[in-house]
Amino acid sequence: MALIGCGFFAQNHLHSWASIPEVEIVAVCDRDAAKAEAAKQSFGAARAYTDAAEMFAAEKLDFVDIATTMQTHLALVEMAAARGVHVIVQKPLAPSFADCQTIVDTCAKAGVRLMVHENFRFQSPILAARRVLAEGRIGRPHYCQASFRSGYDVFSGQPYLATEKRFILIDLGIHILDVCRSIMGEAETLYCQTQHINPKIAGEDVATSLIRHVGGGVSVVDCSYASRRLPEPFPQTLLRIEGEHGTIELLEGYRLRVTSHGEVTEENVEPETLSWTQKPWHVLQESVLNLQRHWVDSWRKGAAPETSGTDNLRTYALVMAAYQSAESGSIVTLAS
Ligand code: NAD
Ligand code: 89V
Image 1 (tube, rainbow, N blue to C red):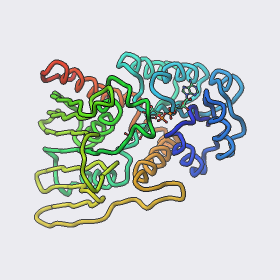
Image 2: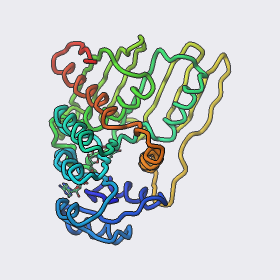
Image 3: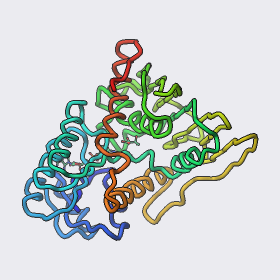
Image 4: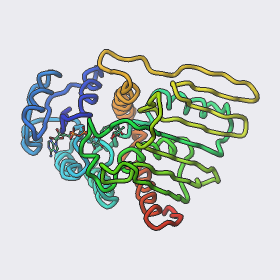
């Protein structure tokens, strides 16, 4: 495989690929030659490129992992699809729904596999909560709160986030809405209020959404980068899922508390740090490995990955609905 984009978050992709035995990092590519060369040296890739077209022309690849920012995704996917190379693309898939749809259609027409790097639903604490739900211990869920509230300076590692007119919903809300979808299923209607608290950034930094799901469930999905509280909980996603027989709570400090048929159990579901992960990022870093492992496993089984392009269009549609609702002040009905 080859990795395109050797920036901030791609380091986690590289560490994860390096620890999956079925995968060989053949080439790396970044417009910035120093970043490409550093990745090549650190992860033992055979070659480093600064031009993706040149790389596609020279290499024989099974798949490519695109970890650049969203503006470049469509052009890079088109290059991969034209050569029959399977693709993983970081979230957000593209800056507009139309471009996301083009990416999905392009891959389908070329017959290449497409997975979106939507890793939050692969965090081990969230997987643990989803497992309890799938075991039927609380019965059918009728309410979910998925919450990410932090005051962490996310702009230090990702400075481009400070200048985007649209910030928290498309960068972070997309993850939390996806986690909510993975638990409660598809949405029928959505209402959202956004706030712009930090005057030093261009976009909204708080978003609160209320969702009615197909089948009648209701969710509250709230995200904030303007929450000043100690201990700083970044980057924990908290959950409260209520069902007919009980409640699943993913609480701060990675405590998974399950009330089932009148019995309460609590366990620590914090992931161990790996040789290349560090707190507080470890939960996100490990989810990259879990997602990339899923790519290999689903491919071997001939199954679609959970976060396929088609699946991710539905999450992306929730983000667009949230912006539309916040701008219009009205409830948005999701199209089928
Ligand atoms: P970054 O700017 O640090 O890295 C992007 C790299 O891509 C840069 O080094 C840049 O030179 C390179 N690049 C851009 N266009 C290129 C092209 N056409 N060809 C080759 N190289 C090119 O950005 P980042 O913070 O690492 O974010 C990258 C993506 O990862 C974004 O889409 C972001 O939303 C996503 N991200 C996801 C998570 C997550 O948890 N899933 C976390 C952080 C970032
Ligand atoms: O997913 C992201 O792109 C990151 C983070 C998880 C830190 O919000 O910005």
